[in-house]
Amino acid sequence: MSDKPTPNRSRLHRGRVLRVEWVTPHMVRVVLGGEGLQGFTAGQYTDHYVKLIFPLEDVQYPEPFDIAAIRRDFPQDQWPKTRTYTVRRWDPDAVELSVDFVYHGERGLAGPWAAKVKPGEEIYFIGPGGGYSPRAEADWHLLIGDESALPAMGASLEAMPSGAVAKAFIEVSGPEEEQEIQTPADAEIIWLHRGERQIGDSLQEAVFSLEFPTGTVHAFVHGEAHFVKSIRHHLRIERGLTRDQLSISGYWRRGADEDGWQSSKSEWNRDVEDAPPA
Image 1 (spheres, rainbow, N blue to C red):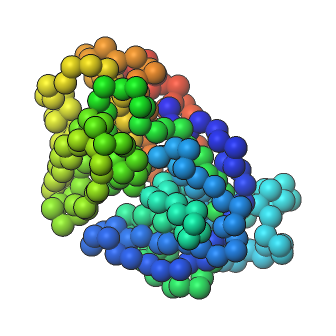
Image 2 (cartoon, helix red, strand yellow):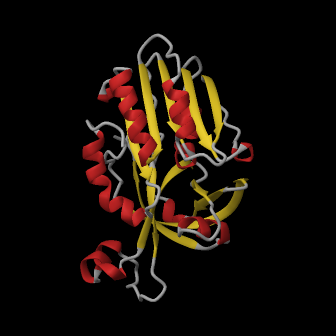
């Protein structure tokens, strides 16, 4: 699983928005910086994630902002909302943290914030967590994911050395959502266009029919929980991969917001280890 603890996982940071960049029509990148990021570190993993904190508008929180004190002293229905996002890029020299957001209009919390936020505004976040990076001793790498996994997949491909072999299957809504990913690896990046199909269907078809190269594979399967579970089952049962060869995470689940998904994710993590696909 990817949600392994890292030393700074619970540390509170304050980021100032430096710029906002539209990568595709539905992917917006927010670049954070400022003095509040001086203690931030990342780079051990390519799936580093942070938990962005969104205070409730009608609740007065103490100053200085202290999330631990809020969770201790305030009723739970007054706690700020949190949303988990992968670090797309961390530049320690420039002290710049890039986070990509899928934007679906006014639906949701973090996407609309990213689309409207202006340089100079600030946001608190916790992290980073993470647990995956491409394993150097693997003969080849298999990366599978939807838009929510694209930042980690991009970071992983960029981190691979020259000579590394990789196949990446990335499902997006259409051709306009493809991104340019630069990698020194010998990587085949396959973009799958979802169109009107159910999310993950194209990924499952592509992976189930894939002729695996020879050698030991290190696989990364992240994204919507239903297809992640199905592909995980295929890789474990049909392909014979061991747990150690897999990084598996359901980033979200269709029909549930993050609050609902996180409340059930620990149970999903237990079930996904041995259960057949839903």
